Image 1 (cartoon, rainbow, N blue to C red):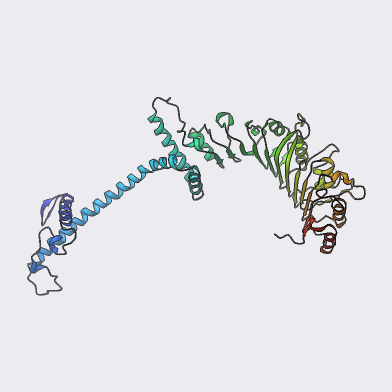
Image 2 (cartoon, rainbow, N blue to C red):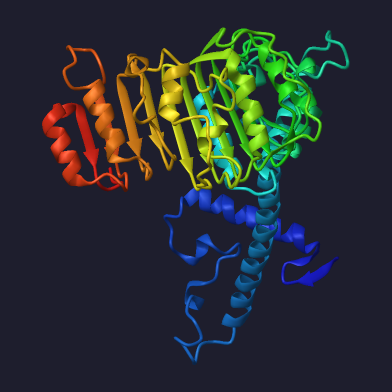
Length: 478
């Protein structure tokens, strides 16, 4: 496009740039110190013309050409400036995008692991649909590609990342099949420093395809028995069974192979036992494998048959602490006690510290049950030192014919929200295990918290007899 203007014929973009360059040159020379119009006009306006028409309504008409010249020059400079601004804006955006992966690479290589994990977690929480995770892994892929290019002596199909990237990870939590796919797509197979791995319901980690020499803790959702494949070096294992049919026998065989296991956590949420369960073979003797902690959660209508089979299978363990949480067990054929002692030889739970929490369970009194639960524990577990009950249980102590010598190992007992606990049971415990005992012998603490059938008057009177070893609260408060 060619135009005819006051300054002659030419491309308006070229004319504007020329005027803008001349203006910038003058601005640079005077450093914005000269306020006169000479600084801003390429051809200075005569001093007698440096007024506006409103200030001098009777001025000579020769003022108009100079004003129009200045106006056209200013517009040409502004047009050129706007175009330069637009080009610079686009250039800045392009450069920022180009810099992003390099900045990310530098940050990944130099930031401490703790800060890097916080950044990733915060970015993940602020986005939906794995937007941040996708960008993160794509960037890691670019970094890996550049690293490979810089190491051309490597094989062409080598897609592992530099040691100071994923090789620095100590914890990996995967909650989506999308994330699992991104890891596989990125070729992340070697995790030499990974200590903890968590993969959720719809993710599958093929342990045989990954290098995990230091992994000691694995948390996993179970879909089918074939998922019971674990690394032998594990010391901590957490399994969640969610609304699925479970065969206990394959689970027990897999657990038997974990020779270094110290912490085991099992959750069964709304599960049932398979129609034709395999026979549980006792390859190991009862209480022959020592571990630190066993945690079991039975939730939301899980089948009583499954619970009984599970407890039978776990009798090979000898944990220091056992924590059992049973909630929403709505069964009209079994009391809580029956889940533990169905046969005379059954000896679960077993441990020096035993905690049983039961809430929203069906309270059905039958003509027969294996026996009061505390009596059953001490008769089958001679190492029981501390026993805590939280929630409704039908009975605790066998009245009348109790062999109190079986309770010799007990030192601490707590009852919380045990609405079926009776005053005669508490009185028997206190008078047989606390009164007249030598220092350090017998029950050292008996705690009664918010048990509906225990009155305050009774506890006050009992406290006078046994002293400060009895601790109690009438309400469920901290």
